[in-house]
Image 1 (cartoon, rainbow, N blue to C red):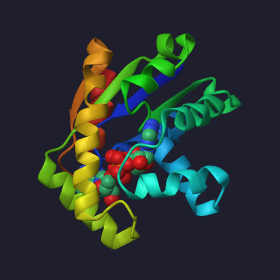
Image 2 (image 1 turned 120 degrees about the vertical axis):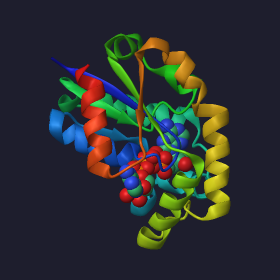
Image 3 (image 1 turned 90 degrees about the horizontal axis):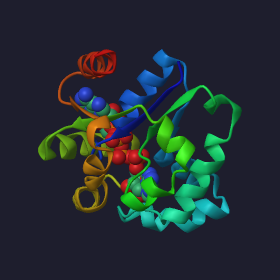
Image 4 (image 1 turned 180 degrees about the vertical axis):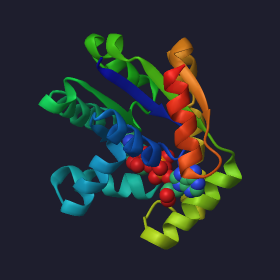
Length: 184
Ligand code: B4P
């Protein structure tokens, strides 16, 4: 059966980490808008130049740009049999921009829950490991604000499709909870 799953959660909750593991297990593509945008920045494309400063400030890239790249990606052959969307939609406008066929097909919305101190600790560690421009403390606080203002309302938007998963603990332990949530 085709699996179409959305991952929601604040920055640093582990969406990217868990979505990559789950996509491998389910053999569906892992579609991360954050990864696609960072690749565009690294490659110096026109898109990358437009979004670089917005991302570095911890703000959301404009809806039309993100919706356009997701639309194109979902048309690719490998997405026909399912996919994991990670980091998209990020607000109600983006959720409403998904076409009806996609909305009808979304089976599960996984919400990874992690407290603020843990998120900040993880992202500061990632900053040390990877040197991402948006992982310093001031920008992390800004990204959290943006999450609570723009993205958290999606939990209500998706209503009964949302399954909460405790994102605190070792990566394998969290993954076991994700797998259990999908199995029940
Ligand atoms: P994202 O790439 O989505 O980044 P994120 O929210 O920081 O990461 P995530 O929650 O996936 O955490 P991860 O697994 O990496 O977005 C970055 C930026 O792109 C946004 O701020 C925005 O500007 C832009 N953007 C993306 N999508 C957009 C959209 N739809 N619309 C507009 N703008 C958009 O985990 C974080 C760290 O924790 C990692 O170092 C990981 O190793 C570690 N970790 C994970 N699980 C752990 C665990 N269980 N224990 C300890 N550490 C753990």
